[in-house]
Structures are given as C-alpha cells and as structure tokens.
Image 1 (cartoon, rainbow, N blue to C red):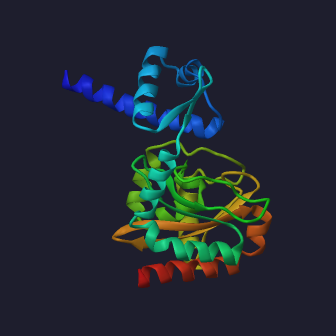
Image 2: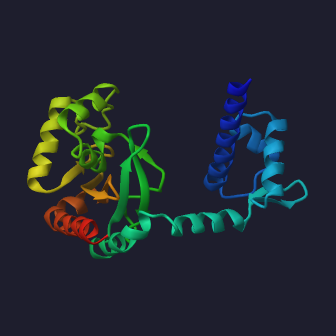
Length: 252
C-alpha cells in the first residue's frame, strides 16, 4: 500500500511539472480538454490538478470556458529560489563578464543524477544569431564540451565505467563514439587548455569549456555559439574562460 501511495505521489509531482512545461511551451491559455490531451491523462485527473493549482494561486481562469494560465506567483517563486541559489550567487558576476567580453552564450553545468550534463544557468548571447539553450536542459557527456570537461575531473577507470554502460549516439560525422577516441580527446584538451565541441552535437554549433571546483563539487563553464565564430576566437575565448574559472575557484 505504501509503495503504491509513493508511486502515486511521484506521478502527481511529474504531472505538475509537465503542466508548467506545457504552459511555457504553448505561451497561451489552455482549456482543460487540451491540457488533458497534451498530458495524455484523464480529464478528471487533470481537473483535480488544475483546481489544486488554482486554489494555491499558481493558475487562474482567464474567463468562463476560456482556459487556464499561470499567475505571477510562479515567476515570483522562481525568482526567489534563483536569488538564493548558493552556487549561482557566487558565479553570476563572472558568467556575466564572460558574456560581455565574448558576446556569446555562457553555460554553467554539472553532471546530473542521470549521468548526463545538466545546464544549471544559461546567459544568452546578445547576438541575433546565437546558440539558444535553457536551464535544465540535459546533454550527453560524450558529444558536449561541458561533458568532456566534466569527464576530465574523473579518473580514466571511472570515465570508462560511465561511458561503457550507455550507447554513444553519433549526432554528426564529427561526434566521437569510440572510448579510445574520447580518452585521447580529453588528454589533448587538458594539454591545450580547453575542451571543444566543434559541430559534434549540432553541425553548425561550437563551444569550448573548462572545469572548476565549487563547494567541493565539480562544475564546468562553456562559451557557445555559431561554429564559425567560436573557431575564429578559440584561443582568446579559452584564455578568458580559464581566467574566469581560476578567479571563481580562488576568490569564491
């Protein structure tokens, strides 16, 4: 009985997150029937969730039979949580300086519980043509500059164990899918002072990354953008990135 109750609680929590993500994706009021369809859930279950979220002040009805939409409470809570983040609070000024001096998208990440790269913070580039990402995105370790940087913080045995247990997807002709090739790339990257993704996950996107230690945990920061811009500034971006990571580790 207890296991079934716990499973039901987890499913309900996932439904709430899915509802928030649906509103973020659709960016418009949604009727009960449409939400239930997108959730692939019974209308009765969806209605119970909507009524609960409405009673707590997170949703409101935009008009009779016109659908539901999130209130400002959700944004206010998100801002409050973000401002109190113990890691982002320390690194935000350095991330912002990197964005200003490179004019590219800056990403802070670490390895998540699913053993993939999870984006913790994304500062978008001011350029109209840029790499676009959002916090919470997850990427495969082997085809991501941040992933390679984070893999470098592990010993070779741990890297091998982690990568052997999963299929290494080939996203483009440049994606490294051999454990031997990935190991050689990590060692070469450590020697030259930057980890690269040169069209390995998306053909026209490039990024460089470097790891850092924060509060006893391993993180990484990347500079990402169109491949032609990243390749033209590799050494200069790498220098700025290493300086930022060193400053964060030494001062924060």
